[in-house]
Length: 451
Image (cartoon, rainbow, N blue to C red):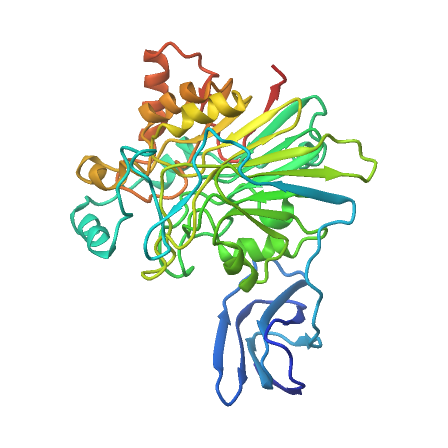
């Protein structure tokens, strides 16, 4: 059945966001097209959605308005009840949450640096093993045209070697009061809970890490949970804008939660998120800190988050290379501290961070996407192999470390299980205990005592 709804609306400021909602009573919504007509503007946005169960689900679509006629066309199997257009207010953090941004608080660490074109660059004096410029189109083409094919795992092997655990909703809703609780949600997505704070890092719950869900790297396993199954989230930290770390659909789902989380991002990402209808975004440069305080009477200690330098690059298309910054994060209360590496090559910053901020109780360190031997030349400056990850763990003087950035998508041509095996081998060779640096199962939750 094809339904067409036509409305004539008054003009709105381009800064306003209009939101259209409708309810699906049963069946699948195949396709929704939303667009507007204007003398100088013509735009169409397609949202492809499907559901697995016959239950009532609210679907939303939003767009910025410049005036003119709005058309909404939905092709469905069953009757839809249509809502009205409304202009919701911008998201605001809860009234009891306040924060203070502290600039240039870590003198031992460098600030970010821009090149002549305003793009971020790595200073060779601070990052001696980094490329002067991030990979351009010709370099990426050379890598893609010469790298070997990705190994193929059978479904049985995936289920056996990369099992998915469904996190306990009770454990997520009521984490231990005297411990730090860490849940690995796949790739670089980590939920960390301690001292009544819930902090989420690089969340992505989509099937593909790609500009479209029709093409691109596909998950080896389904995510252990989805955005609506998460507990209340206070803060979301983003390391950089690559598609395996920043996903549009996931960001919009999380932004719709109430109360709204605070988003902490490196320089340059705030405008992209706001254009995607994500608000409460705070940009930080390397060595900046933010202190978040809760005055609601919950009695939780202030949360301090530090934006830290690392060795990587950014791009979401062929034209925006390094227009945004990349970062690692340190989050701490007086009792616990957590380091999130995000995505980085090995560099001297880890030792400097350990000296400047102290050794973290738990560190999330990337161990994968270093590539098969013919492509190591391309990935070495920007991704760590397990041997370098262990050295990062030692440089930080981390009490415990959890491996991230492996076993979820096949982004490079090393076998998906190789990073885990190499990590276990190097930990054994260097005399580290089995629990010093470990690989969790997808969805696995671990609790760590105060040192």
